[in-house]
Image 1 (cartoon, helix red, strand yellow):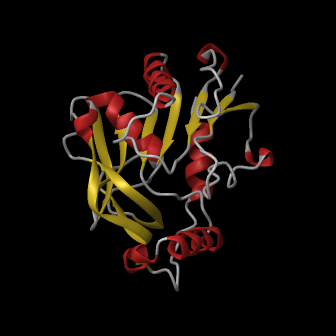
Image 2 (cartoon, helix red, strand yellow; image 1 turned 90 degrees about the vertical axis):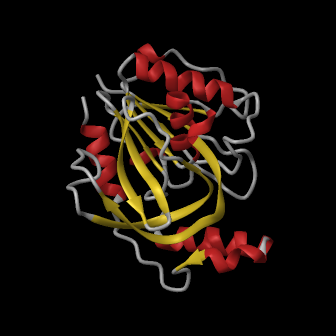
Image 3 (cartoon, one colour; image 1 turned 30 degrees about the vertical axis):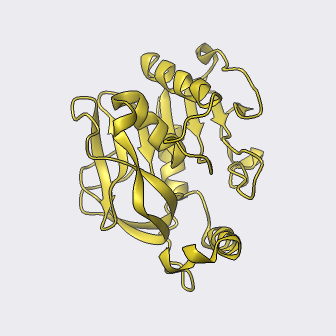
Length: 227
């Protein structure tokens, strides 16, 4: 029987990572944890699928609670669980695979709605050459030093070389963008951020006219359909 572990990496600030994931959206039994809040790492023998969210903290500035997330990601790979890491968790998964050098602070943030190109056929992201628009909001990024014997880059954009990757031989992916966010919610999130930090507004692409492929439902369905 399929069962999902949902790892909410919210830290109590303006970004609620769990908001796009109401209980009604999950097509299988699920359990939520938040390691920042002090939850223990659960027994992964009870789960077949794992989704781990974004976060406003940085993988490049480790905090003790992040060790629990990295332990979970490492064990998920060992147990061959279906795994999807979003944004911060995409970066944490890269760190687990190749060390701290696989993640770096960007010279400038990537924000707003960005066109991304699938560069290899993939069961989640589609065919090579497909182009997907989705929300980006990150200050760090996975580098191309991601070990090729451990992971394969699946998607990139003009402003980020690793928008998604798959762990070789596993049903495990990291994706940088927030496909789970609707244009309306994403715009509200970025407007809130711009009000707090006006210096970020020039980096926000297509903020006034978000272009979004609406790909989340396809991505989520394909992930949940995995054995």
